[in-house]
Length: 195
Image (tube, rainbow, N blue to C red; front, side, top):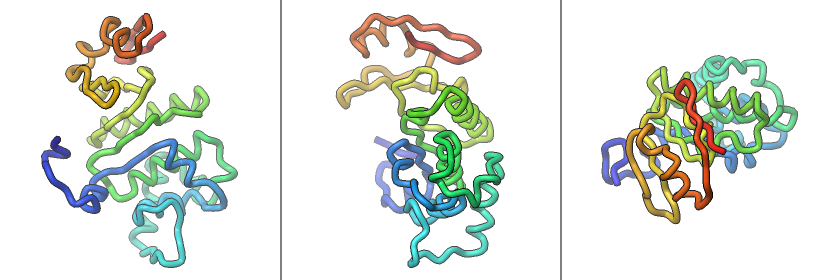
């Protein structure tokens, strides 16, 4: 498998090119850490700022810029434990963006979020894709697949079941086979919904 056009990687070099947003990572970013500290932790591949971390002025500036880009500067000094799930998820996206990665990996990005927060995360993914950031999305929710995502890979039991353009892959037949239940699909303005 090739990642960003290269077959072999030093994992630390690869990390510098990717930003990760996952519900599991969010569970590690709880407590008294401020929004800014969570964003800064992205420079250290951690979930908080620890005594052995030296934060440089440029890193602080980049963290504040990432918060501003997502219009959440007001969360910079707020402890994560006082944020809503949606606010905390947006801080996690800023953490993933802080080092200007080539691609963002979203792993089940809307899990445990209310409807408004889900819409916000999806709008953020669309905005990032439109600004040139590659989006890699892992999800069970068709609604998470924003219109800007053009290629879809269906997987089951660790195997690729289908790979190709979204319109050809997201069909009733394929998804019924994938999930093992009868499904219906609605498509509107580039968004897909499954029931």
